[in-house]
Structures are given as structure tokens and as C-alpha cells.
Image 1 (cartoon, one colour):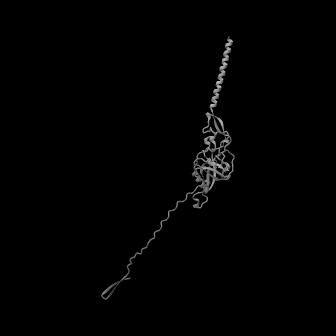
Image 2 (cartoon, helix red, strand yellow; image 1 turned 180 degrees about the vertical axis):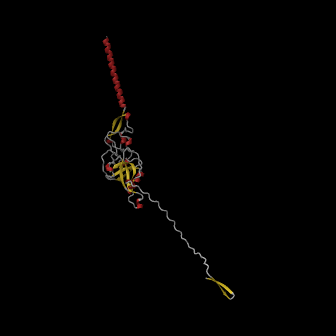
Length: 282
């Protein structure tokens, strides 16, 4: 009797345990299916300025609690959109990495709002030996003659000065990929500028020679320098010019006036002729 009751209790316990496992499994399955969603990711490496096609995108399961902000859940919304940054394979495609809808492909899609793209000629030295790559920031330095050089006829009044700071390099030659780290010696660099900076750069390249100065990527601070001249380079102390002598006042013309002087008294002779008398002075 006791053995039969024990066996029945064990059988009931096994059935309850199996039911609990079945219910828990279904609950976990339901929770797992409801905690994921579809996200569009890059199927291949997408370069900057490329137009997206369905062959470049695929939908994958993504945890709902870790959904990237701006991610796309419908691949059709990505058709004909243009990438404004490089997107790696398997990386979620987000709105912030795409140009506005309707934008044409190419470098124009990469230029930020209110900015302009301008190309300047460089060489292996001016181009920082090819290390100025797309995505880097550079300063623009110009070497020209000082303002007083033409008037004084002195050719030693040359000056080198940084005229533009923290300028983004959009492309080197015809390449705009920002994934390359190997230096490339090119003959032209395209920069992203504001309209005012574009005017200054155009003037700078017409009055002197330009040089690019590669700067730290995370350094946002601007430094306003006075420029380097030959005197400051050689640490020459400029002598103060002697004070100019005051101009002499013009001499006034003196008009000489003749003054009649009284004649010195001489000898007098009295002459008597008959009844008349007269005096003669000598």
C-alpha cells in the first residue's frame, strides 16, 4: 500500500515537472520571438557617396532592446539613398549616415549644409607627403609678401601665416574613401569650406604659395598667430627709427625801407651882398 502511494506521488510529480518545463519553454519562446526585430545592415562595404541598391542591403534579426537609433526596419526605404559616410559590411544602416532623400550621388552628397567644396593644387611636400587623407583636418598656411614690401621696395618682408584652421579634407585627387590609411601622393586636394573660407583660400593662393599643415583629429581649438617673418625667424631686434626732425619754418622775406638820415652839421658861411644876407652850408 505504501509503495503504491509513493509510486503514485512520484508519477504525479513527474507529470507536473514535465508540464512546468513545457509551459516554461513556450513562455521563453514567446518572449524571444517578441524581443527581436528586423534591421537593415550592409551586405557589402559601402563607400562614401555611393547610391544604395537592394543588393547592398539585407535584413537581420536584432534585439528590440538594443535597436540602433535611426535604424531602418524596411529595406525599401533605402532604395536610391546615398551614403554620406563609409559603411562597413554587417554595420546597421542609420539615417545619420545617409544624405537627405533625393540627393544625387557623388561628392556633392558629402558636403555638409552651408559648406562648399573647393580643390587646391598640391605636391608631395605641400600635401603633407600624402598623409592628408579624406576625413583628416588640416590648417592652410600662406607664404606671401608683407603689405609694405611694394612701397619700400624691400623683398625681405615675406611672411608665413596660418589663414584657415581645422579644414576637413573631403577627397584627394578623385578618391573620397575615408577607410584608407596609407599615404597617397596626389596633385590636388578637395576641402570643405564655408563661403567666407572659400573666398580667403582663393585670395591666398593668388597672392602667395599654400601649404597644408596636418593637425590632430580631436583638437578643436583655434590658435591665432601673428605669422612668421624673417626678423622673427632670425630673432633680429628691429631698431627704432630716429624721430623725424621738425621741418624748418620758412624764412620771411624782410623788406628793407630806406630811412633818410639827417646830415651832420658842416661849416656855415654868411654872405652879405649889399643889403641882403644869405647863409651857405658846406
